Image 1 (tube, rainbow, N blue to C red):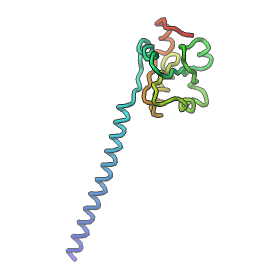
Image 2: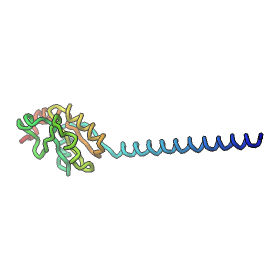
Image 3: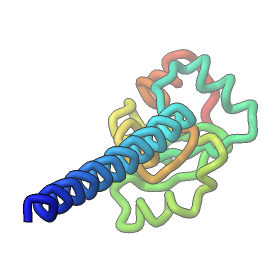
Image 4: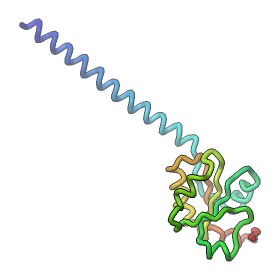
Length: 144
């Protein structure tokens, strides 16, 4: 009887250790995967000069202002996607997540929120124009 209790306790101990080990390794694996994704993902605010420099590359330039704001002037080559539009997130989904995105709005608030949303959606590189098109214009940068 004593031998049976010892075997049962030993078996219980082995099962407990094994299940804890699997749980820990799964959590470690998930944490490592999240760390790799965070390292390979860029989401940052940039000034007008850096934004303009990045525009020279193969990028997606997105204006998240309203149609009325866009009509008053926009950065050449930008695609309007209204932040307040009903299909805002669905329109973002149409973009290439592997290709860098440059995003701007009037002063940087909406585009900052859009950048955070795109980060959660899995976009690899997102750059938000600090100060928005107002800062862009103040620096004498071109608008259409």
